[in-house]
Image (cartoon, rainbow over all chains, first blue to last red; front, side, top):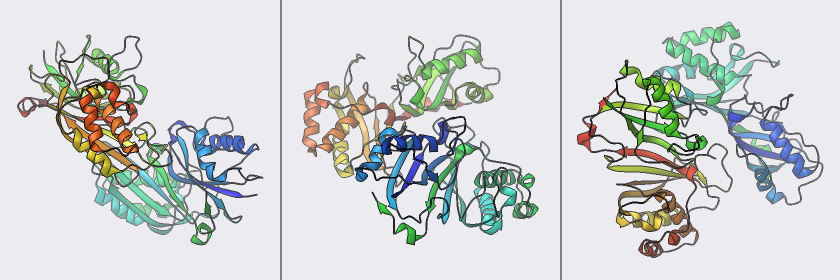
Length: 259
Length: 259
């Protein structure tokens, strides 16, 4: 039994999210499990670092699985998987991982990116990859809100219903808005030790709402203090969101052997 | 009768190119003409600055049309068109153009971009937007070839069959390879006073072929001298290509009134 760790990228447009769906509608997990089960000639279950919503993309999702026997030509595993996956999903890297590695439980922090097409006219080429906001956004004001997100805080107001969790406290190490290239694209990047359900989308939607009303930073703190999902109001659309990176403790990373 | 000039962007993935197709398969021109005919309550024909191939994109395609009566709320024309076009096509700007403006005949120069995903592993997010080249490309060598393309030359060897032209001589003002952002994306940008059928794709395909064989620049000149399409060999895939910009004489531009 060798545990295999994978780093994946995908275009979420045509999928109902990461998670396998009961009705069999297309999901990243189901597509990946189908290919791995074929290659290993047994039923393979993969565990991801977390779910991504329908329409949300990934640059560096992490997943692991444990086949009962090794792959015959393991140096060719990545190529074999990619030759069978649809074009919209790709495995970037594979590692032999130690037994104590777990995509979800070992994750130390995650980085998400949220992209906005900030132009009076919508974009044809970014239509599935960035949220269209026609009115000009004030980056300085947005960055004031972003600074108010950083730290160890209770994010209960920014949690969508559905998944019970022990605590709604999370630590955000970094949150920042910046222009992406010189075009009308903007990018919000956030790194934290964990994220509640739709937390990034709720944080983005709330910041955009506050910006539109030119609210003071104190208003954001009020929303935190309310500890009530109703206080946050807006959820930004899923197609602007990218799971960018998942990080693990160096001690674990060092035990991962690249294939 | 007022002539209207439009600047368009589109994702060419789901279209059989710019040109209206006899069998009614989806084309940018047909989609645009359908929307304009509906808005102006008459049959509208548009003239583009040139065709783009199936799968090829545009950041700044130019087209014009001449309705028999003006649009009632012309300041809202762009918004009206965009509300009816599919998401994969968008009008960025519209102008009232002088009678002597012609999208195709007045064009003074055009710029195309060709994008390459240069990484051992294919890209999910760029799959329809860049050609995948797995082996590392030598940018310096490619730029030697690019420098050999610049100037007034006979591009007969780089013309695909199909469209008769008076002369195959064109003037290329600029041609250059550079990394796009810091990622594994590369970009070839070329500006010229006109382009033959599939000329950019043939130039890119030929440069990639020469690079793979580490050929000297002289080999490129041999291909020019042959004046034979068979000499050029390779046509790069259409989905890496973007029509980036079409330029007109300033005297004409100055007579265009932005709506």
